[in-house]
Image (cartoon, rainbow over all chains, first blue to last red; front, side):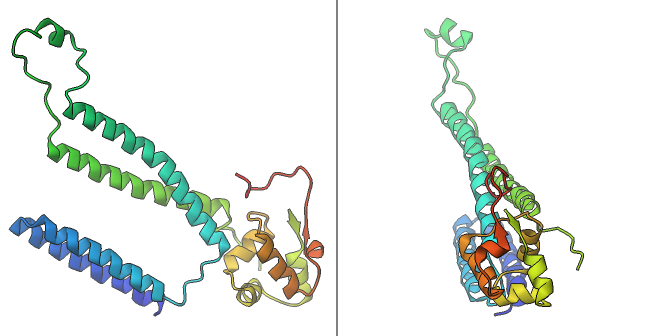
Length: 153
Length: 72
């Protein structure tokens, strides 16, 4: 398969996924979109393996490897911080506020829980952060390993 | 790591694209190696020198104490 056909396929899969997303939202069937998304990714992966005019040499592999590693290093810190905050929120922690200790005999209102909606939005934001980090690191390492060097030939 | 790929290419009248195709890498990789932006693996260094039919030390020279971009 030629790589242009693969790029075309990405566009088609994205459009189909967008349509399924719209349908899922309208009919409130999030599972449908989840399944479609996974199938779409698998389909693209299988297609990617069949592309024969991609030249991936050791330099491009190294760029990918470095960018992925750095992305993971930054992302896990952000994800860990968010997860700890979310768990603490769910467990009503920390209970160190003055109000809590002053009113512990009475029925106190627990601190407001983070809604699932907010958690979902933050997760989506973290996902976007991961994509931006990866693209940023990829550009950085591609430049470092001479991707945009000019040639005097 | 210094290299004389450009010199050997000129001697054999090869373009970067020709050399890249012959050893199975991208032209950008040859350019990056020539400019010292990327230090090739031992395998690739051998393939390049074998293509020029010379020993690896004739194409690549290791410079003591010179930190290359590939280290970090």
